[in-house]
Image 1 (cartoon, helix red, strand yellow):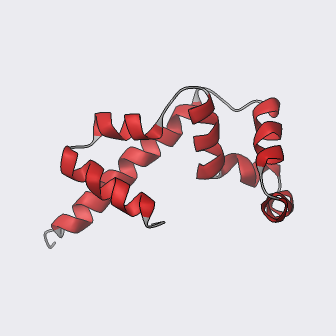
Image 2 (cartoon, helix red, strand yellow; image 1 turned 180 degrees about the horizontal axis):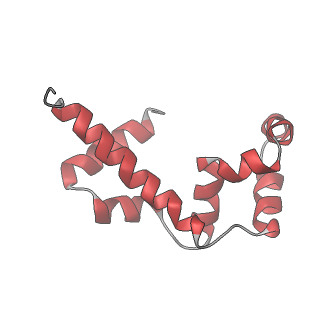
Length: 100
C-alpha cells in the first residue's frame, strides 16, 4: 500500500466535511414548501431540467440541500470554517470559487 499524496488527503478531508454538512438534512428533511420555493426561484431552463430529473433526484442534489440548510440558518461557510484548518478552508474556498 502506498502513502497518499498530501493534496489527495486534503481533497478527501474537504469532501468528507462537505458531505457531513449536507448530511445534517437526514434528521431535518426538507418540506414541500422549501422544495416549491427553491423550484420557483430557479431560472426557467434550470427549472425545466429539474422537472425532468424528478422530485426524488432534486431532493438529493447538493445545491437543493444547501439551499434548505442555508434558509434554516445552517451556513456552509461557517460549518466548513468550524471543521477545517485554515489552510484547508482556503483550499475549499478556492475550489468553490473555481466551480470545482
